[in-house]
Length: 475
Image (cartoon, rainbow, N blue to C red):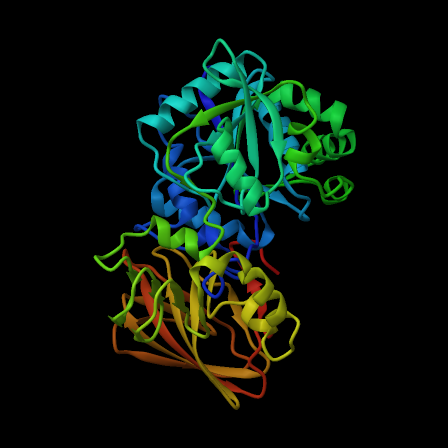
């Protein structure tokens, strides 16, 4: 067994704190906020050094499995495995499942680094130094977490009080502190000796399993059983549903790190954010002379220290300060940056109303294993979509009971199957698929295929798809 670290990336969360861009079906880890990569892809890049790391293990769920695989492929990142959680059970059973999987494949002394897929980190020399200290500390049998040097009395993070220094350069953990009120956060910063709890961990597979068996036996037993009876599915590994569902819903902090006497922390000075609010996005963005972070089409006048993001129309913002204005294809959020930690309350309110609940669940752009589509226009008995198909991929051979479709090729080359005929469509060419006819769309080219699809009929729901042949195993 080498001394390389095995990264375990948690990518199954469905957070909506960055609404309206992030939604239940399109969570923030798979969205590009800053830079030219999604947060998930940036996380993969941080663990790509072959001198430090083995290929990563990704833990996600049924809904995001193809999205995770495709974004890894775009990056050229090799994955050791994609583990699929059948139900959401928080981080303790996910960590236990990853540790059991790693112990089986690499041995109990293999070292895992568990990290979230939706954090923004500047991985410079400080980061690499912290990783090496953590690896040495984990090899000595400690359960290691990373503590970030606080830059402000933040109330959205948990804190760790740093204890005595260990031989490796890490420190013992004196105690964990829940997300504090502002006055308590200010006192901790003034007194020193406290760091933000980053939620990044490192430990030996066998060591963390042994301690989970002691402190959270039900979570450990359920995860181990789920790995033992897991099934392969294409490029994925499905954890056993019945076994995994028997685990309690509990975080690894509550289940283990706050109870063990074996916890260590590496105080770290690298730039880190959990990207949990629009304020965090603004702080990490490239600001202009007036302190504004602008993304997309926007015109700004007499506006300071604000975040302006548009993914659709042109935003014009005038005479404001300290605000977030974020426009997706179908919704706009406007709020104070210093209040953006509370977007979750607004999303719950939207979710509770019939007229707006869909805005919190689905996004106009949906991703599929072959590419995806964006809903452009919906009307009575018609719908217009933009389809995008990855080179070499194809949709299922399918038919619809209630609608006909018109396809127009706008970019690339399309291979279209209609009944027993196969046609090639080039840019500016179109084809008609009658209601009930068996059909398929494929991209035989080397560039992204873009099509405009016009649906007409009495029912246009996504469930009106009868799949006859599907290379991705969908029904």
